[in-house]
Image (cartoon, rainbow, N blue to C red; front, side, top):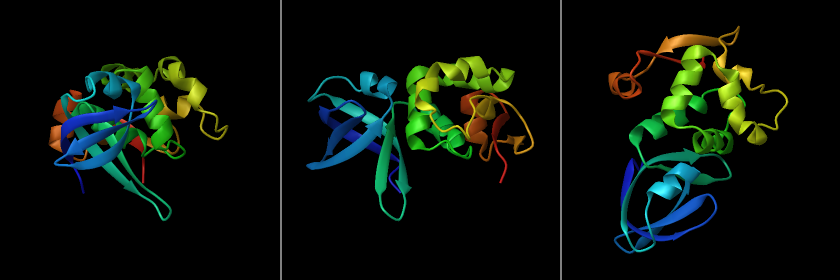
Length: 158
C-alpha cells in the first residue's frame, strides 16, 4: 500500500493531481480542499494516500492531512458512500465540521454536500444518525482517536 507521496506537483485537474516522485507521476484523486493546499505546479508537496482496488480499477486518493484520510476511510464504511461521495463531503466540510456533524447527528451540515448524494437509498441522515444499521464504535486505532479528538466515531457496523 502507498501511505504517502512526497514530490513535486506536476499538474492538476478538477478533482485530481499528478505528483512527480523521482520521475514517476502518480495520478491522485483529491478533494477540492486538498487540491487548494497542494500549492502551485512545480512546488514540493506531500499527500497522505489511500489506495482503492476493485476488479476494474485501482484508484489512489490523496489528502493534505492524515486526519482527512482517516475521515475518508470512516465515511466510505457507510454503505452507499463511495469514494466520490466521501471526497465531495470532504470538499464541502472540514474534518472538524464532519466530526461535529457526526457527534451531533446534524444531517443538515452533511446536506451541504447533498448535490453529490444522488442515490435515493442513502439519505443524508444515514451518515449522521445512529439507526438499526449504525452503531457508535471505538475507532480501530488509538492514533485515529487522538487525531479526531474522540474515542468514538459513527460508522457502519459490519
